[in-house]
Amino acid sequence: MTNIIYTLFIILLSSCASTNINQQEIVPELFDPELKKGKIFVFSNHAEIGTINIRVNGEEREIKHAQTQIFELKEGQNSVYSFNRFLGNEQENCDDMPYTFDTKMFPDEESHFFIIQSGFEGVIFTLRCFKDFHIKEAEFLNQINNPRSPTDEFFEKVVDDFFDEFIF
Image 1 (cartoon, rainbow, N blue to C red):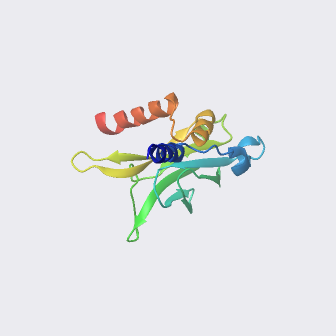
Image 2 (image 1 turned 60 degrees about the vertical axis):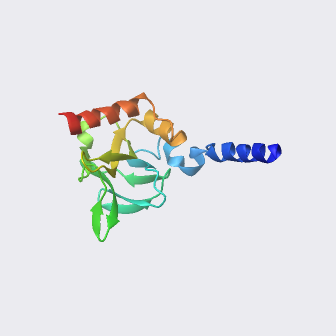
Image 3 (image 1 turned 90 degrees about the horizontal axis):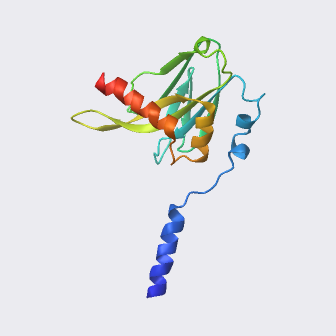
């Protein structure tokens, strides 16, 4: 009986362990300075069972949890928007509008990096929603290699967004 309990405990521990994925094999563009120029990289850390939708500069795709998608960066205005579709309606984005940025605001950056994160909104009724974070490359690489381990910059961005949205 004791051996069965130990075996079940080891199976439980091993199922909770994360696997090590070589991102360089999955997304080689991230690690080649020439290939990553002019790209928008989006990593989904939304923890949904199924896929969600993402629209970048008008191009719509489905994205799974822990997947990275690559889009072309346009000169000037760019937009990123994650959502689910229910009965033909786009919903579940915390901001209800795309995150928009202009490349002129970031003259030194040739590539841009985003993470889709699950969040919650509402005071009386709490609803799950998606938040699109524009982050630095180093933070992006850390997140795709360790999706369950947010770092200081990520927490700082989440706290800043929370204060902007709900406090002020």
